[in-house]
Amino acid sequence: MPVDLTHPDPIDLADPRFQPLLEKLQGNILKSHGRDYAMHSFFRFRGDPAAARRLVAELTRRYVTSAAEQEQQIARFKAGHEQELFGALMLSAKGMKLLGLTLPAGFGEATLQPATSAPVSFANPMKDAAAVFADQPDQWDAGYRGGDIDGMLLLAMGHAEEPYDADAIPTALLDAAKDANALIDGAAEVVAFEIGQQQRRGDDAVEHFGFIDGISQPALVTSDLPPPQDRTENDPSAGLALALLRDPFVRDDDACGSFFVFRKLEQNVRLFRDEEARLAAALGGIPRDQAGAMMVGRFQDGTPTVLAGAPSGASPPVNNFSYAVDPGTPPAFPAKCPFHAHIRKTNPRGDIGRQFGGGAAVDENERQRRVVRRGITYGSRDNDLGDAPSGGVGLLFQCYQSSIPDQFAFMQNSWANNEDFVRPGGSGHDSIIGQGPRGVEQTWPGPWGSNATRKLPGQRQLVTDKGGEFFWTPSMPFLQSL
Ligand code: HEM
Image (cartoon, rainbow, N blue to C red; front, top):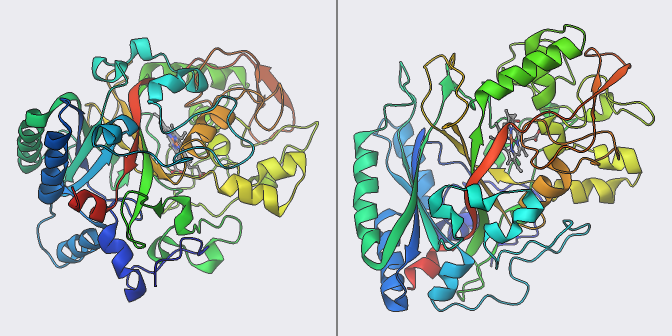
């Protein structure tokens, strides 16, 4: 029986009923590949469809890891074997057309209401959506500027060893990427190449501003689902339909694919520290780490500000919370986690229903916007992250979803960049990823925990898009049919 994508719950990867799905799906979608180093080769075909098909077939044969194979790799690693190379392959709409494919009507279009303020479609390159995301493609890194990327190969390997060094990229991975790029260089040209090297603090994966990342994710598989007592306030469960759809380019009911977004997001660490200090002073001399925490919605150790005014040290960080405890019911504003805190903007956990009324349907609509994040940091830092670069470091943001317009684009455009999010005229941009000119003031609790609020000018933009593309992650049977 074909896999039921409408099934609302996470799946058990050990259940034999899902084996055909796993064999025909690329890895890294249902479960992260988990490597600390990743190479991303962006290529443009030279124009010969037959040669392009041969190249994709060969890259698949050599490198692409199915979800089933990823499970076997995990089992071998746990049994003490060396960690193996992981590979994934994505194609843009332009690349798919060159391979001779016709996108079916509606493929990659928005289906949910409300939709983004301007239409975004998978069929067009990311640069055409610049106005929607407040991107400046003329300032992107050269390889992305033309919007003519056809595909991306991801190769990943290596994990934290003691003492961990983000700069110690495994030689075997560098060699594999070199071989892959040489192979690509026949039928295509490598137009951009990005090296992901995960920053860590101890065992924790952190992003360049110093915060633990990757805490809150939709759980598509039961092994990622917390026990029932830890999901009373926030249930991360997700059905397969959040990330998968049937691959329309192959006749096989078990063959699924996923839409994929890549964005190279540069982080200005110096400016972050500056904004943090200014905010701490403006809110009456609160601790700096509390100011930074209110920008993110969590302290560096992951403690949610909605639950505590100082880091709790809880490990793993708490994720079983909603904003019902700090609703900021009009005319008041939240006292602990501002509406524009990064994690409150990107996962409002019921805020939309609470502010505008609505109930279960509104909450479900909000949950359907979630994305599966798989990004990795790039750029070199001092080992203790004590330096403060103003460029050259950031996040190779990557996410999977079943609809780019309904999920990533909506999250960035209608939530992060929308100054009227939840509270018209009073929330402002997402403090971390908001892009675009600052129009309204942001409303902060002054200080943390206080119902008194202070309106401050919108913070400066800390994260800048340096390029990216929309991709489709084809099924294994499709890739093997070329
Ligand atoms: C969560 C940082 C870009 C969506 C987080 C967290 C941090 C963080 C520190 C908290 C840890 C966690 O809950 O996993 C950053 C930085 C970014 C960035 C530094 C850019 C350089 C983005 C983008 C999006 C996004 C572009 C999507 C448009 C999310 C989501 C969560 C999250 C959905 C989880 C929220 C929750 O469920 O509570 N991010 N992020 N992030 N981020 Fe980002």
